[in-house]
Amino acid sequence: MELGEFLRTMRARLRPESVGVTSYGARRVPGLRREELAQLAGVSVTYYTRLEQGQSQNASDDVLDAIARALQLNEDETAHMRDLARPTKRKRRPVRQESLRPGVRQMIAAMQGVAAVAMDRTSDVLAWNTLGHQVLAGHCPYDIPDNDRPNLTRMLFLDAHTRELYTRWDEEAKRSVASLRLVAGRYADDRRLAELVGELSLKSPEFASLWSRHPVLNCTTGTKYLHHPVIGRLELRFEMLQLPDDSGQRVLVYSAEPGSPSEAALRLL
Image 1 (cartoon, rainbow, N blue to C red):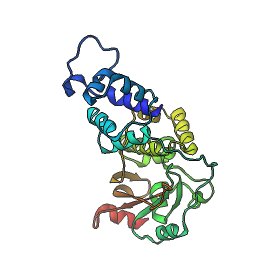
Image 2 (image 1 turned 135 degrees about the vertical axis):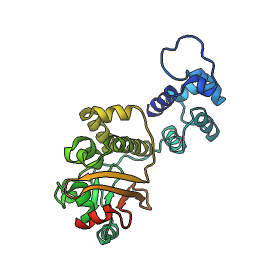
Image 3 (image 1 turned 180 degrees about the vertical axis):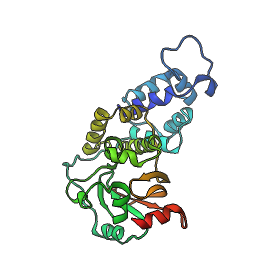
């Protein structure tokens, strides 16, 4: 069970002395024992064990909040734990390509001076403007999203051109996996998402290692450090804009600081 794996991973990262627990005897595994975590959270060991084993899906908000505090979870991790503890029951839909609303496609095409990419929740590219294509995937045909949609996470781990694009690849990889973990918790029934995780786990040891650590982060803003094959070094701010529906589709926008060398470089594209 995903919830059990997450809770065990979060327990393992805590040092007993850091949470005021006196350690007795040798520990077979790192981190807190179940009974220690249960005591910190104020719940019975039996109840916590059932929760970790996936045998209880009716945990109250108070219990989940207490466990989150005991595990020292941040806001994103707490939200992820709630998603895993209360998986949404959805009717499984057949696997099919998602469509992008014409208005969103038109909006992206009209954006000037910024790189914009529309993605579904699995990070498949649905559309991009000219600058978005040139910045992220100039080695791919511009119209590839209409035929064989590239996936930004797959490209990050498996495509040599994309790997060379990021000067801080390790940082970008951690951010990408943490974001995918959050999405996977929200859409536990998504078969395409499960297939993507399975593929990357088999083909990329680096992805598999990061995925096993259960990182969680809602990546909505930040800075990307790139080395573009044509225009050189770029430092771009990004904003992730969620479309106002339940599709999970997003628009990723990259912009350069006004007057910066990166802004001048983007004009060359």
